[in-house]
Image 1 (cartoon, rainbow, N blue to C red):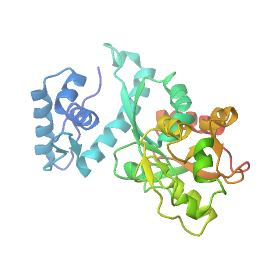
Image 2: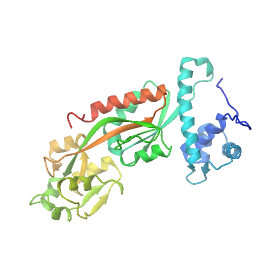
Image 3: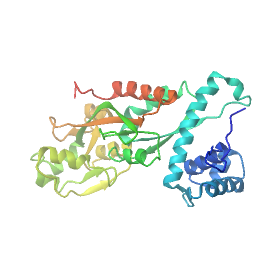
Length: 314
């Protein structure tokens, strides 16, 4: 049977992982009811476990919602549960007798930007999951902000454009994603008949993923001193981004790999053929020696090698 630890009073405190599992489930599912279904217990049982854990620690761990959110202490405990779960999973693989009723599955929380998820990242997690008893919980975030999820303890690892390692983590270069500015031929004829200029950009609607998306502005700033105020359509979907550009809704920065077929078929054209934007990406994970996390990292690095441009080719 699995090893259990009690949370005891006194100078030496050990954690009761049945209570921590309830906390992790509530934070992951963002609801006491959904957490109860995941744990196959009643909502009142989950509530009692959370209250007991909070009483023993003397602080609030979950801000009751909807949705339920972890406090800073709660996030730290959830990260601990995740790390212990990976170690336990490896141990159970080596000693199956410890889990006579079948192994549970650890859930790994990761943060990734939408364009990586739409292009190269799925092969990475598919290769990892093919040989692991682990589930994945992905949070979509702009690449400039995924590191915040890691820093707060909300996720275990992240794809980010931040080269500097988050405290307690290591930062591994993945390669660069090539972005190109594209629009439909009709859109280019309408808004850029005399070429792409700051004046034309101030009138032509652009596409943005969300309020954190600065790729369009960065591309303009790369070629002109500053980006003009540009009319904007907001589309929080990588596929919708491409579809909207093809439909003539606006111009936007798309991963070159995602629009290669549309460019070849003439559904999209480049605003400036010689003006790509290269976005370096990094994989940040804790510096802990966790075998499962190392295997996930190897799968991510391998997929990035195939799907991103190396520094030498960028």
